[in-house]
Length: 404
Image (tube, rainbow, N blue to C red; front, side, top):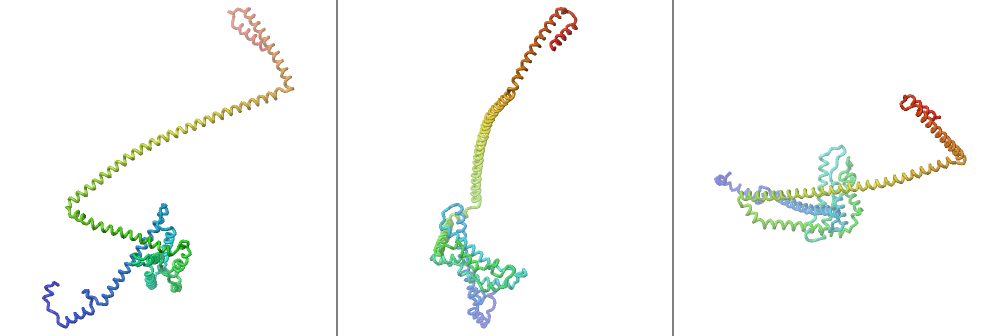
């Protein structure tokens, strides 16, 4: 309805106007939201509580993130051999407390029932119990903003509560009937109280609690202050550059596009130059590698040839020594045969045999000479122009005589 139409309507009766005025004054919210005063106050209170809880959650989340980052940086620095801001015992204790706190947080998860189904009543009961236990421990688990900026003692207590705090309930969880996965608020039969009792006996918890909390608080506060300073510098730079950014945004679009295109072209040309330079370097390195490979191949060949010469020399030396050894063995066999052959019994017999052979040779020589003379006589008797049969007969006669 327009304002002109509303103005044209007749005014309400005085009783109605008075009633509306009383309602607005005593029962309705002053912001014209048409809510009751109690509902409006409850809404404002709920918003304030949510904002406060959100602030506490963000503070706790920031501290938890810094604690996790400290543990990660400790492992990275330990692997690289870098210097640490705190002692290794502080980091190990912090990591152990974080692991215990996360394990205790998982103990709040509701488990399955005996029949394997999830009942709505049990879910509501367990969720209500979990919310109540979480609300009871949230105040001890979240640090205050004043402790972060002012006092080390308050901050150390809140930081240790963040890294260690978890619900310490007992009594009601032990009275619940066990299910398939165990009783509620237990994980594999372990309660949070038992977990905290056991973790106190670990070697990582042997550090001094006061020094541990003070060192941890200082380190986390320094890290958060550095991040806040960097964020403040960034906002200051944004404020200083706002004028130049406004000038750039007020420039005409074609000029901006042209500038962007020129920057892209320059970057592309620079990348092409880098690519060409890398190609040249690659070619040079490849040529150097080829030369190195050729030198290595030649070196290997020379080494193989040298080893072959050494092997040949060794083999020649071995063959010479083997030949000398064989000659020595043959000489030994020769002397051994001579010793076994020329004995006292065989020497006279050999002399007789030699004498007989000499005499037989002389007799054969004399017979041969006589046969030759006889053949000469036959040739003189028979002329040379005679038949060949006579010559053959003479030769056979000489041969027969020589054999005899």
